Length: 423
Ligand SMILES: *Cc1c(COP(=O)(O)O)cnc(C)c1O
Image 1 (tube, rainbow, N blue to C red):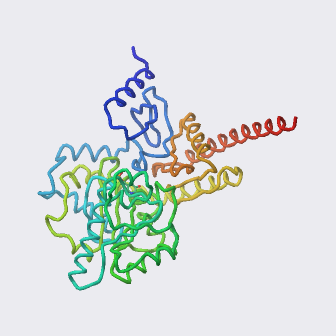
Image 2: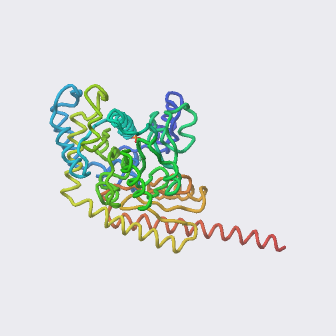
Image 3: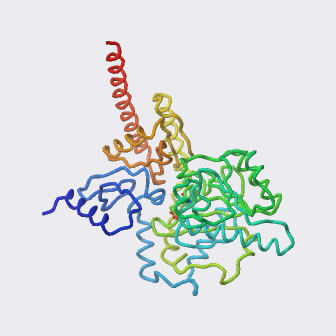
């Protein structure tokens, strides 16, 4: 009989030979899950504070998702966008009510939603030019941004490693320094067709834009007819305790994008825009084979209705606030935590070194708690919305013990160095 360890080695070897090398995976095989816990093939449970990178908002094995998949899979899985099915309008009705926007386009992923937003913005600028307005084709994106992996998305993603190997990327993108209003004003002109931002940068390290910066972006775009586009692929659908992170700012964008948690783990993205912007698109200009299929839409409707029916937005707000308070208390105790940021259940603790963050991640894993590291030094928490107070306490307790252990070890080391140096 082959041991789980041997199975893992075989799987690793097979993938190393057969797959394009895009990820360094964790050497663990998860085979199931329930609630906020994942389970590996030996039946060991892991507290999941990452939820498939912000996707599994209702956790694992949620009955509403299972029921929606079962029911819809018996009716119709795919029909293409050449025919009607009731799911898209039913889902769009919910999303437009939640967002304050008017129309939806459905696709299969975050990056596709972002591509749709960029294409609609360029087409809308063209429409305005035809109507006699002076408006260009340039995008202003923000330093430290992440918008996805396809060409439009990488061209607006700031980190060089995502963009430069694939050059030339889509032209006409300029980057503005994060939260630097003067830089934004300096780079804005009638050449710009849209300002693009994540209200809370995700991959960039859970960094909220300032009220002042967001407001300046809104005011500038309004002054020329350019668009304000908010990427809510990670922060949207209740992750921050409101349906959209921009609602914390009281600022309404012209376009927003959604994906990660939208269809309970099935691939589904959405681009939402105003009625005015939607004038730019006519049949045949944009489309997708799979996007907004009956199965994905049925599950997304179930996800949204479950969030509403179980009061999960309030739960995320309360649980997130307790989690953040706990992290702040740890920051007061441990000098290795230099900042605590985020909103709702989109939280981060920034440490003073990448090495330390790596070590904390590994030790959390040893304690069967999954988190992740982004922007080198940032511990990122994107747990399922159904996280309970006891899970928060378990995570905080583990983090506290790990940081204490590391401090004791480094104190001993420096003590030894000092006493050796004294001799
Ligand atoms: C994950 C993410 C994307 C890309 O989504 P994919 O589904 O991986 O294409 C885009 N923007 C933000 C803010 C994200 O977090």
